[in-house]
Length: 180
Image 1 (tube, one colour):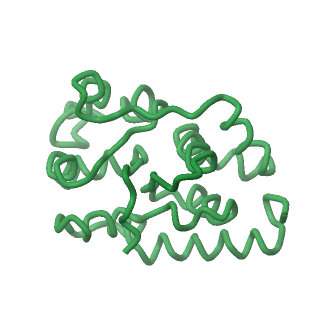
Image 2 (image 1 turned 60 degrees about the horizontal axis):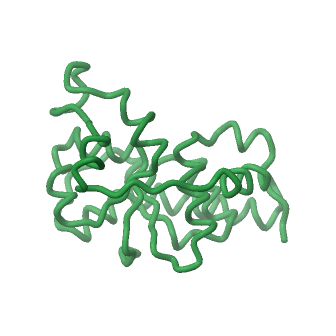
Image 3 (image 1 turned 90 degrees about the horizontal axis):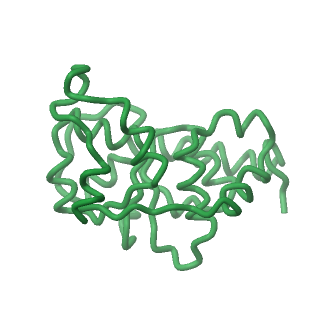
C-alpha cells in the first residue's frame, strides 16, 4: 500500500465517485484530504444532487471556507513547467485540475502529497515524471481506510498499475516527453 502521505490530493472524478458510493463524509474523517484549487472552484462544480448523479450536492468551496479541507494551489510557473515537458497530444489529454495536481507533486520535494486519480493520461504522466510513488488508486485509499466498496475498473489498483507501467515504458522510449 502506498498510503503514507500527509495529504491526499483527490481528482474530481474521485470526489464525485466518493459521493456516488456514499463514502465522502467517512473518507474525510479517515484521510487527510486536500483539494486542488482548480478542482474546488471549477471541475467539481458540474455535479449536483439535482442532476441525479450524487446523493448530495458537492460543495468543496464550502468545506474549504469552513476549514474542513485545505485548498492547495500550484504556481503558474510550476504548471507551465509541467506543460512544457510534454508534447501537444499528451497535454491535450490532461485536464487543468490534473495538471495542477501533478505540478504540485513535481515541485514538492518532501513527498508530502499523494494524488488519487482514475485518469489514465494523468497516471501515465506521473510515471513519465518519475512520480509513480506519488500516485494512488481510489481502491487503495478505500482499502487503507476500511471503506472499500465495489468500484468501476478505472478506480482499481490493477487499472492504476497498468497505466503506471505504460507511462514508465513511454518515458524509456521517449514518447510524449523527452528522456533525461
